[in-house]
Length: 170
Image (cartoon, rainbow, N blue to C red; front, top):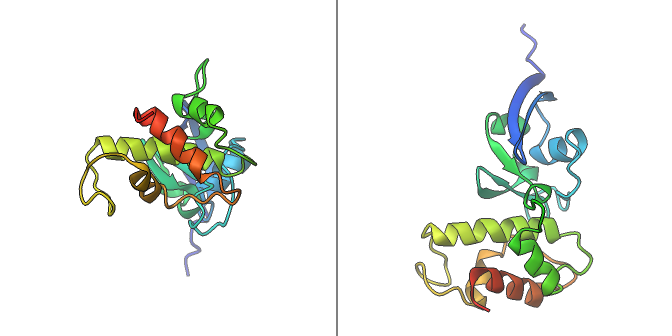
């Protein structure tokens, strides 16, 4: 009987920096980011993809990092909340600050990454249930498109305002 390989080598770009790591095949992208690459901004919430606290951008698209195995992202580019800002905060980060959209802050990194990915999806013409196509980005549209991210503090009104500002609606 052949013993299965328990680890693999993964190569990925995280926030613009290349990494090559040997990982246990069962390691999630979330655990790789937090435990091996010291990116604590990505939060572990429900560990089931239901809260969105672990949202990062994978090749520019938002994903729940708790649901992806690290070996599945070999050769890809990951952006965490730490990788969004250069010398200045990303406009979405600045809008969250301006609108007090972070309350306790635990869900904020996932909310910000998700909001950026959501606006890119909208720009690419991805429809939603609310708009029945690609239409005006009103509050209902923002709430529908951000439905995968939960804020237990109830900062939704401020989060919507921050996203609307970055989208050019305020």
